[in-house]
Length: 144
Image 1 (spheres, rainbow, N blue to C red):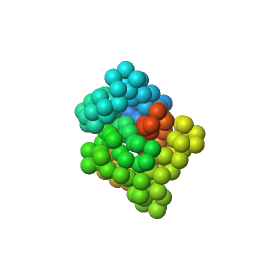
Image 2 (image 1 turned 135 degrees about the vertical axis):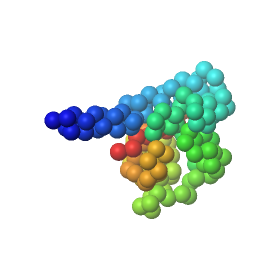
Image 3 (image 1 turned 90 degrees about the horizontal axis):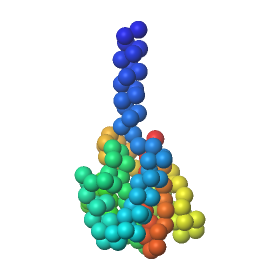
Image 4 (image 1 turned 45 degrees about the horizontal axis):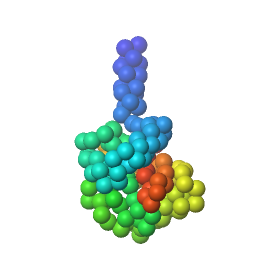
């Protein structure tokens, strides 16, 4: 009986470390509110702060131009300033192109792809919430 209770405790603790779809949407909405209040440049600086309010467990915000240039990345500063339009995931999918198309045609939506989880350091399936605001695309995703 004790073994079952301990296992259940670890399982709950592990689940608590992962962000939810609702939290990903809320992070994007928070970034948009920040852009409205403080401007894009200040928000970009805040998103790029890996210890800031736009990083929570395995959740982090990213901001792109409509041409695929990464302006902000809460988990990987090496991505910032780079044109990422031609990168592919492990399945050969041009996932940046795909997310920009969702933003352009729908304004908001979800995208499924595979990417390295900054917590586990493994390539994992991910669902990304996308929202276009002005001339930029703000995203935040959950690892499955």
